[in-house]
Image (cartoon, rainbow, N blue to C red; front, side, top):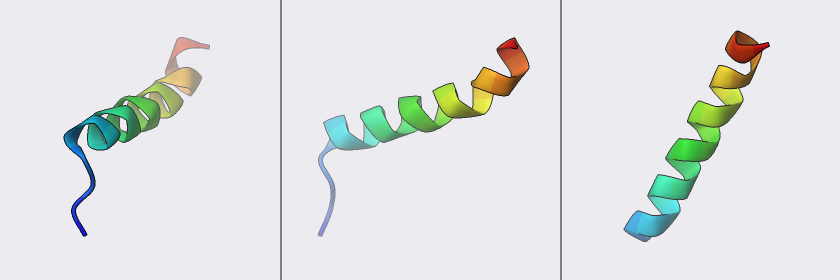
Length: 25
């Protein structure tokens, strides 16, 4: 099963956001 491009984008932005949270603080 291949996830939809929209889902991949949301997951990518979510992971990037979580990874950048400690850097912003």
